[in-house]
Amino acid sequence: MLLELEDSQLVLVDYQERLMPALLDGPAVLANAVRLAQLAALLRVPTFATEQNPSKLGGSVPELAAALQQAGACVLSKMQFSAVEEGLGEWLRPEPKPVQGNARSLPKHLQKPPPGSEPRGTIVLAGCEAHVCLLQTALDLLEDEFEVWVVTDACSSRTERNRDAAFDRLAGAGAELVTTEMVAFEWIRSAEHPDFKAMQALIK
Image (cartoon, rainbow, N blue to C red; front, side, top):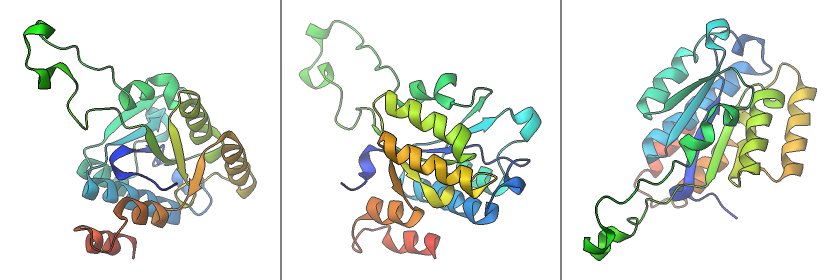
């Protein structure tokens, strides 16, 4: 099973100014998060980010904030560790808008949702800390019947043990574990894709 670009949404969890310096491999993890946001902007993947208690931990790191703006990301401030508890699920799977007017009087093509308007059910997820906010968000998304793909080289905790324990638990719960380059090449699929060279430039 490969990632489907047209069914994907990207969620980046808590890459914040006062948190990142304390994390294992923080600069490399942040660089991959920025790449993911840039890829999402390039390929028009809906993008979301979260910030845990930003008054204490600061906002998103500036280089990521710039990439999120480029991707047109929605940013959710939260106090709960799971972003789903703060309404992320409703952002990822919004309620369908009711059909306006009398359905019988509408042309047939307006009586059904247009192609491509169905919610995207695959969540490409990365963030910090892996064993707290990322883990709890991922488990809640799985419970809400999303497919969850965790980008391991864009995730971190303060210790290797906590990070790896999170990956073990996520895999056992049914999440797919991938890397940034796996996401990029599965979204593109072919060297003939019009954005292939731009994608290569981002990951090199």
